Image (tube, rainbow, N blue to C red; front, side, top):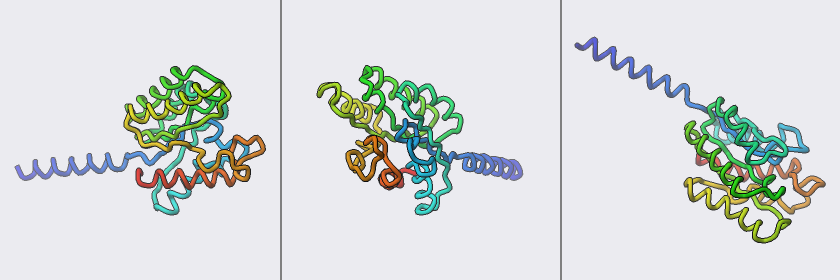
Length: 204
């Protein structure tokens, strides 16, 4: 009887150890050109800088996937998500929607895409963190306000922790942006990385 109990105990220890060892250490940043780092080297884009900050300051051994692709809409991000989820990220930092807004796409569809991304990620046991976006009033105040409200509704509906505006402190600051006035330069990415790190560090 004692031998049986001992064997069962050892089996349980092995199962616990296996589960612990297979815990993911991967963070996925799913976004567009702002995430990809258009106009700067991949190593200078904020996802890579966040990875370095986490390793240096928190001594956490993590892997960051830069899932940013220039021109991506929420629909494009949803299409790519299945492939990224094969990497089993434990955090998905969702930073999509800017291109939908800049192109004047139907925001009901955009919101549906974002919600599908969230549901798929959560079904894969990933924690979703939301980065909100803002757009210029090119399509009128009603569209602009609806765009902003989209992120607020999603945050409440799925009880997500979020950054209200990914580019806060960078947007509109000439010294932190490239000539197009849209994409952050190297210093802009450093600024974003610090803000994202502060947001992330208690959630790892």
